[in-house]
Amino acid sequence: METSIKDLEESLRLAMLSSDIKTLDLLVSDSLLFIGPDGTTFRKQDDLELHRSKRQKLDQADWKDIEIEECGDSAVSVVTAFLSGSLDGVGFSGRFKYIRMWARIGETWKIVGGSVTSLGS
Image (cartoon, rainbow, N blue to C red):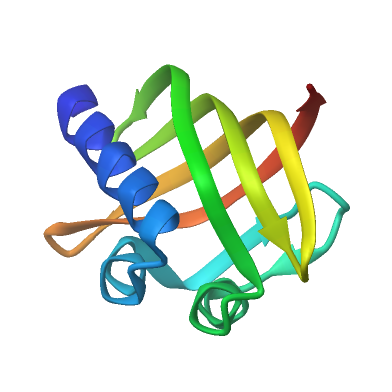
């Protein structure tokens, strides 16, 4: 399973970087609950709209470290990343840590929950 989740994490990274709504839609569960770095709760449509509207734009998204823990038909990934870009026209860059909960829904893996924390520059 680890290789599959690592592959999905790479697909997610590329989709986030290019605001690929189609791929993001496939990877993210309709029931997503995600906590942003400021504590805001996002659902799938909120996340897709950030990309669709270009309110969030990533110029760089480098995954530096990935840990994956298998839990039956679910998995948890912890990703340390360097990101730069803008949100609502305000630039940002720095290190971030994501935790994502993946679940097998039918034959497909989807992100059902997670959060991101800023680690500073």
